[in-house]
Length: 319
Ligand code: RRO
Picture 1: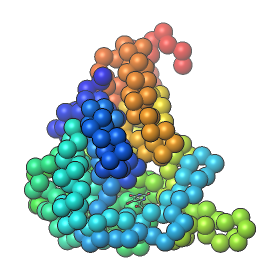
Picture 2 (picture 1 turned 180 degrees about the horizontal axis):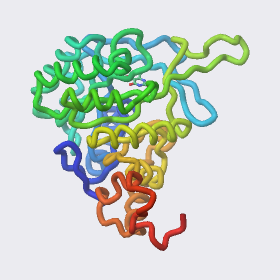
Picture 3 (picture 1 turned 60 degrees about the vertical axis):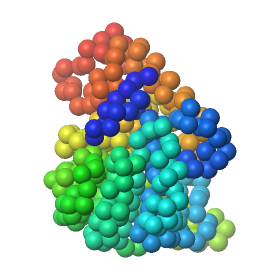
Picture 4 (picture 1 turned 90 degrees about the horizontal axis):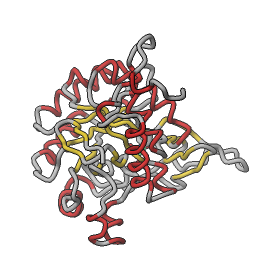
């Protein structure tokens, strides 16, 4: 097991879930206490919550593409009060740190969410989702604007001492600029990337296939986009990063670590293979051991080393 640190959290290994891709409460119902004994992630990230309850977007909400998935889920959730009363007590029983993901349509609404979640001992960090592609107002319109992103972080910092993580969209002109703005506002870490804006057309009706029109593309199709964002945002800010986007193997994890992530999120591939976290964690352990890298931290940002000075860990290895 490759223990790692992230924004002051001690994690048993570097594999977590991407927000909204693993329902730990349903899994606990299905597997009982066995889930707690063998919990697959080193921290748990909640589904993004909003201030008021939401039903989500009209169906269809999911569409499988040749190399991924497009979703238009639209944040169905119980709202802050429902989350605190019903979900938080159950999530607090998980044997790992809890990261609560929040999204709002304005700075003040974000601040109210951070205030509501931030004074709960059960919560280890808060993810500010400024990158959901499936709502009309706020959120991604904040996260595509550096000044708005910085102001949001500054405002939310007033409400909590917990680490604030900015979850950013790759659907921007310059993700490093947004990442720098988040850092300037006081983000402790970054979560990269949310889904890429996308669309599917029904082959018969030739109308948009998803209920709301567009959606967010995830899965193997976006791995290169995600690696690019992690590499550049990590390089620009030096902040710790949770990297995600198409991760389905230990090798994928290694690449994200080299690009600059210190923690890796699993998402779309979990829907196909619920046993993925254990496999990926074991694969990563053995890949790091093969390369003589005793700790996850030894691999983080290896890709940032200048070309003229190859990493000693690569000597004697096939390229
Ligand atoms: O719920 C969603 O539709 C959703 C969210 Br909150 C998000 O952050 N990213 C995404 O692809 N879908």
